[in-house]
Image 1 (cartoon, rainbow, N blue to C red):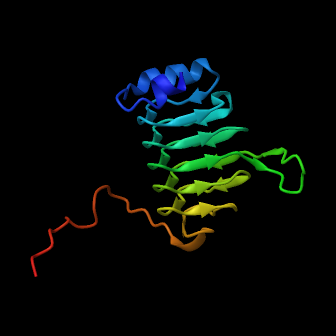
Image 2 (tube, rainbow, N blue to C red):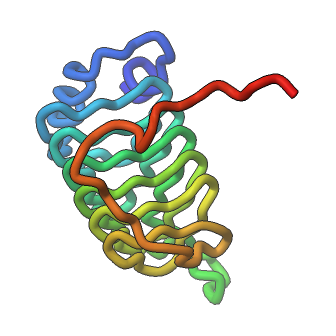
Image 3 (cartoon, rainbow, N blue to C red):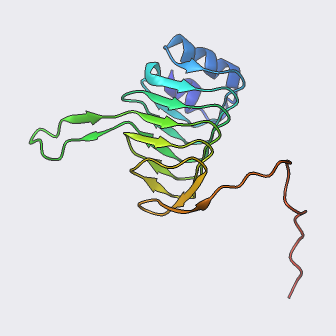
Length: 170
């Protein structure tokens, strides 16, 4: 089902994807967009709140609960991993840990989120950020490992701050 419906680059049927995930035990809110090429392991551990957006080639590795809030954006190529291996174990046994992405957060393209992490409400993980610890609400983070570089300020009106102007030739 994953290969036919979710990894398929030509099937954008968001409603169908939500129904299939619900049939496998996922809790999916209304208005969720799951773009083509998304890989979801163990959907019965997945919760996605209403009006959230999962971008192309995102991998949701749900080895334990993965809770994505409302109005969340997880951008293209990001990887959320609820598991790793015990390096001290000679058998490299699995270690599983949940991830929580709170309402309004934005995980930018190619970011990586490890297990046992909470991404705070309206926090931002910048392009390629790698997160191993909890992130504060409305914090902006970047780097590997991700460090706080600022605080997200949300205007009370939508749209760009000013119209984008094309660059003039030199």
